[in-house]
Amino acid sequence: MSTKIIALGLILFLSFTSLTFGALQVGFYKGKCGFRDVESIVAGVVADAVENDGTLVAALLRLQFHDCFVSGCDASLLLDGSDSEKLAPPNLSVRGYDLIDDVKLAVESVCPGVVSCADIIAMATRDAVHLAGGARYSVETGRRDGFKPAKNVDLPGPSISVPDSIEAFSKRNLTTTDMVYLLGGHTVGVSQCLFFKDRLYNYKNTGRPDPTIDPWFLNNLRDQCPEDSNDNNVVFLDQTSMSSFVVDKSFHKQIWQRRGILEIDQQLALHPSTKDLVTKVAFGFDFASKFGDAMIKMGRFRVLTGSDGEIRRTCEAVNSAWL
Image (cartoon, rainbow, N blue to C red; front, side, top):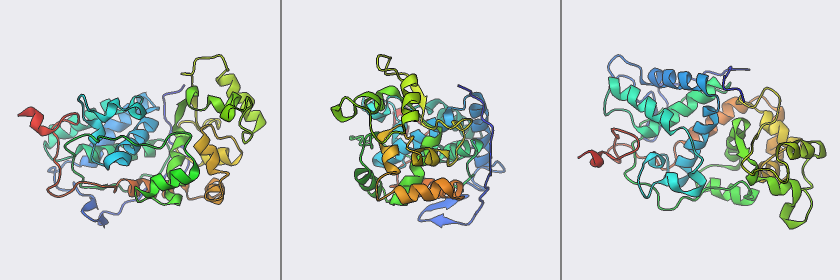
């Protein structure tokens, strides 16, 4: 598995320094760190990390999704402790914490107590997406960090139905269109065989594979996940040649061809509520910009701003832990 990212395809650079949404603002940190550019510091640390490990693109996308979808984009996922969200089953395989810590150290070294961990998650993820060929969308900043982890970690699973997924996204103020684009983040994702092996051999206890899977693709997946193999084997969610580390629309083309790996991914291309959207994305030219728009919108969910929350000294502990 290559760990070198080469930015491919059309790179869209979006820069709107005066845009605001509520208390969030593009360019919030401008002038707040002397002559230093906070976003450039973040981008430099992320670039070094992604150059050494291309899988961090998917890791950061997943980390931001798991943080925002639970109690809002407040970096509560980063908190350590016996009640940490990190210990919830859906989060046990989340990665990217060390990179967020490295970015935090870098910004704290030049302007301590200014940049929130919640904003670092959003900026670092954007930069990783850009390095992987996606748009460099304009991240709104000004978030503050939460004081405690969520008590209930409720995240959509890989076998969720399309209607239930639409409902879950709607509760986070995201539309069905947003959902279709955001799940396109799977274009750089991976999955253990455990989460879809039933589709290959015993779908819904029928003793047969999922009939919606393309027969050629079924054989390909069975080679990667033999029936008697370790369920921890890992496969790319985007099986398109040379595209598994690139943020592009190839994932949508793949599920349109009935070559989805996770059940929710394949059902997106088949369900009446989403199939036309999948076709539009697969054969359109706006994936990069619309994916960025959806990421921006997700990043607005239940944010803490103004005097709410705090700017943590370190991302894994609230400031009162230092007293």
